[in-house]
Image (tube, helix red, strand yellow):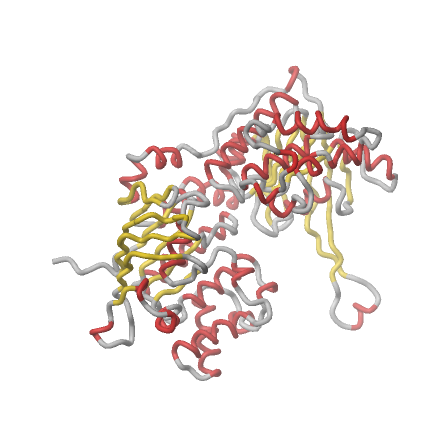
Length: 542
């Protein structure tokens, strides 16, 4: 007879103000198992996990969640219904029996306390350790997660750690009491490919060491394929399909599952030069970008040190072509973009449409009309106080101030139409505000804003990393179409090899400010020469 599951969820319903967002779902997690809950934003997967611990404010929750992993309890109370527990008892379960890793550690960690103190606090509250014992245990947990110099790093505040180190600190905190179930909500979404691999390996190792079960919430299918034993697919608050990862991925039964599987970016770009000839719109030779840093001691009173973020980068972009720049956080790719946009001084040669950044305001304004940018997160890059008409028309107000409101209006409408947004789809479109649209729709607005001044070059800074896989595919198809129709050139900054493969003609691979490898995208990705490039490609295809 098989042993009972660690967690059995039956008929779980979650609603807000009478509107159901999770509708009578059933799933189970066995002891030591890794179950992935997959779906797009709004599918209900995060609400499902949070409801198990009573962390959804203002929600009406019904159903059963039988948990059989209560530790340090009499046998008669080792099985509980999490949804029926009073708040006082749930506080005991949280962190000790069931722990959670949140998506963004920078917002989940308290910025006023060191990471060591935050981990020690859990041990003092849940395990009754003294402050000295808790601190010593916290250092050990940080060391177990692979943070170097754990004793010193335990005194660091969250902002003093890298993204990967913050996520490791979150994992150390979650595993402090050796829980039986770990809820991991998009634990690698904010991380680079190499860090993502390290965190997955770490979670797998710790899961096996502690015999812990993991409920992984994610929309990353590559991550599911590599990490999970079973997968449950959610759409609109309903689990539409579940089973072994190998079975679901090889033979998906539900149309929504097939849609997710088919959402990998598809290459659809013009391979030859427009008009059969190469016309260079951006050229760099030995580009060098640095930041001043303080020098410790007496010498620091008189001068600053220097941190070189980009070393001797040489590249060019032809009209109608895309140069992809790929690398992890700290590689220098975003600093390179800032230099191209004229937002940070640089040394070496950098020409954009035949001009160079300088002290001449008129010259710089002309360059800005030729080079526009689309940022990673459209919610933070679009002003919440401006209407869509004001946002999209902003470039015209700056670069063509002679135009009246009535003259700008048809151009704004056309720009939105070009990115697939019309009044027929969205009544009163121009009078709406950014918060009234989805992430993919906001990114379309951001692209329309960039197109208003008819630029030659678009700098795309992680334009799809904040979007779901199906929306990501739509935005990439839009960018590909606009490039074909307008002959746009793209400088594409990303850490996603699949996006590079779909969009780029040429690629630069960067690490620690150095260009490790460059060339045509097919050549670099099919036959990578540098070990770091091979790592990036391997982690994407594994």
